[in-house]
Image 1 (cartoon, rainbow, N blue to C red):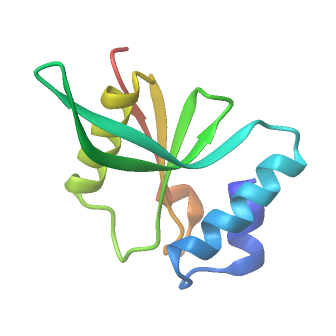
Image 2 (cartoon, rainbow, N blue to C red):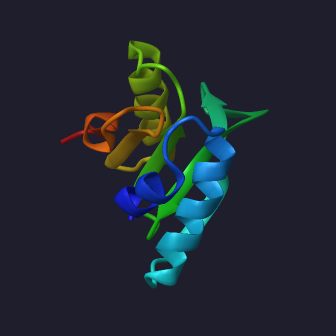
Length: 113
């Protein structure tokens, strides 16, 4: 599905474009999708009025963090790792659509494996 979106749209668009089209593709394939899922910040057992947002959550199991940047930086991995930890999910995919080869733009990130 990532390949379809990449091949039809090509690189260079805003992240939100890839997000909306990817959500469409995933739902068309029968997957349960949630987008912009809020993750609360809890510190010392206190919930703060702050929220992170997961780009796409697939089947309530896999976090998709989408990017459209020149290159994936270490902070992007850390961001996804934090989302995995805060949401108690185990698997995430960091997907950068702004690349000449989408295979180079997909990175697997795990939590507690």
